[in-house]
Length: 521
Image (tube, rainbow, N blue to C red; front, side, top):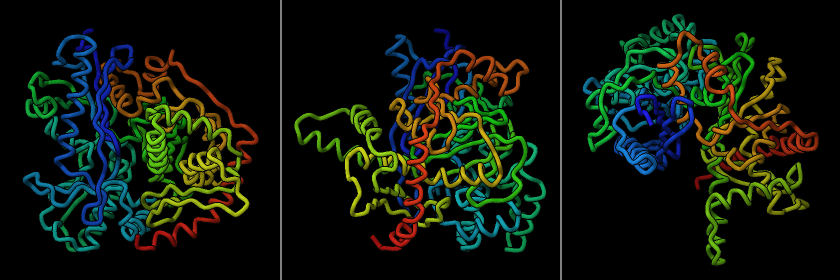
C-alpha cells in the first residue's frame, strides 16, 4: 500500500465522528470512529471544546490502529485530507481564539425572530440553524459576549483552522452560514447585513467576521506541525499534508452520491434528514421550508432540512435490545435493526392507524418549535409491531415529504432519481423502498452508502490532487462512480398510496405535537 496515494476524510456527525481512508481507486481501506452526543448547556444543544478535541484525536487513533491491524505499519502520511462536519451553528471567538459561549449547534431552534427578520431583509429564506441567524439573534438578545467578538466559524471551519492555521470554508459549508452568489457571500445581502449591524450599534462586517470562501479543488491549505500533533499525539503523522477546503455534511452527501450535477438529487438520513436537489435555475419564490445552498463547486441547490430523523427510532431499537437481554438471548445492534426494519415491511402500507412524531428537538419545516417524541393511534388501529415500526420509519421522512411536495407541486421541480446515503439505509431495501414511495421517485443506494460523508470528504480530498482540469461532476462520473455498484428501487403504488394516507393523519395530528411541546416535561 502506497500511503502517499491515499486520501483521508474525517466527518463530525451528530452522534459519531468518522474517519475513512481511501486508496487511489476510491475504495475504503481503513476507518476509525468515535461516538459522542450533544448536551443541553444553558438552554442550547452543544458539544464541549474538550470533547471536540478528544473526539478528533480518538477517531484518528482508531483509524491509525485499523491501518496497523490491516497492513502492519504505522500511518505517517496520506496524499491529502479534508474535514467535514454537521453544517451551520455558531462558534464565536475573541481575538485570542477563546470560545466566548458554548458551541451552538444546528439543532437549536432559538433563532426564530432573527431568522424571520433576516429573511425579510434579504428577501431570501435564512433558516434558524444558519450561522448568521445565530449571530443576529445574539445581537437582538444583546448578549454580553458580542463586545469581545472577533470572528465566527462553524465546527468544520474550526477544526480545519486547528489543522492548517487558516480560517477557510468550502463554498457548500459557507452557504449554510450566509447566502452565496457566484461562489462568494452575496454582495448585496452582505451590504444589508453590515448596515443592520451599524444600526444596532456594532462595527462588525461580514467580511471580517466570517471565514474566506473557497471552492472544491482549490489548493493552498497544508497540515501544520501543530495540526499533525493534534491529530496524532504519538507524533507519527508528518506535517505538510495537503488539506482541501472544509465542507459540510450536505456537500459531502452530494459527493458521496454523485449528486452535484443539475437535475440530480440525494437524501442524507441519520440523526437529521435532508434532501438536496441541484437546480437548473433558482426558485421563483421564497419558502420557509426550502433552503438555497450550493454544491461544493458552487452550483445552486434546493435543500429541505429536517432536524429529526433516526434518533427516536434508535431509542426504540435499544428498548428491544434490553428486552432480548432479559430473555437471555441478547441480539447484536445490527441484528436488531435488521429484524425490526424488515418486519416493518410486513405492516400495512398506511401503518394501520398509527402515527409517530420523532421530534427530539424542534422541527421548523413542520412549524414545531419544541420537540416531544410521541405516538398516537385511534381506537381501531391495528397495533402490531410491524405497523408500529413502519410508522416509526415513516416518521423519519414525513417532514421531508412536506418540504419536497413544495418543490414538486409549486415549483414543478423534478428529479430523475434520488440517491440515498447514511445510517438509515444500512438495512438493505427497507428505508430505500419507503423513501421511493414517499417521494414517488426512484431511489438508488450506492455500495458505499454506509460510509456516508467521511467517504465523500475523502473523495473531495482526492479531487484536489487528481482533478486534472476536470470539473467536480466530470471527476465523479468518469473516475469515482463509473463502475460503482448500486441498487435501484422504484415506487410501488400501494406504498405510495399508503404513505399519502399516513400523511393525512400525520399533518392533522401536528397540532397535538405543538401543544405537547408546551408541556413542561
